[in-house]
Length: 227
Image 1 (cartoon, rainbow, N blue to C red):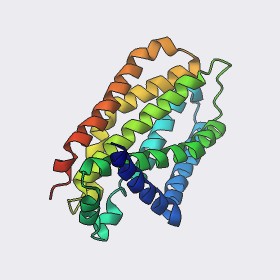
Image 2 (cartoon, rainbow, N blue to C red; image 1 turned 120 degrees about the vertical axis):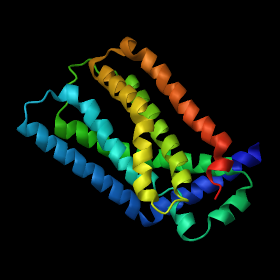
Image 3 (cartoon, one colour; image 1 turned 180 degrees about the horizontal axis):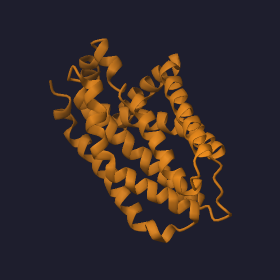
């Protein structure tokens, strides 16, 4: 088991090093997220919209669309360079590749959110009136990012074998993410108004959802990467 997690860490470190070495891909994701922030803030200035009500939806729409750029590159480098088969042979267990890619995508999403969430908060001008539940907000961000990374990694592993992968990836991803997006938007709104008890059921559902889409691909990844 220690050797298993050592292999996961080595592949994770390789992917993360590649992600930050050029910085082009991460920068493109950050710029796209910042553009969404400015567009939404400009729109709210022109329209009479209650920002406290709209902020959770705008936040997760921004994270969702930006994650499309970040996550769909998970297997692209190995596939383009013909190194995917070598990586499969080196690890010996395809579940190791899934976990490493999942942790790398989750790390990239967290870095993205550290930059974009404060920008969105400032430019939209959210007023919590002292009722803000920061713990619930952070947990909802974590659960949402976890689900995005897990489903995105699984679907990227499936679609990487298909020539039209870039078109198929978002089409498959959105329907699977509908329950996740509903849950995290409701939890984020509850955090703004300090109403944790009203969304406890959604928190448990999000946790179960994330565990399902982490454990199922981990078990079935041998079949995912076939072809």
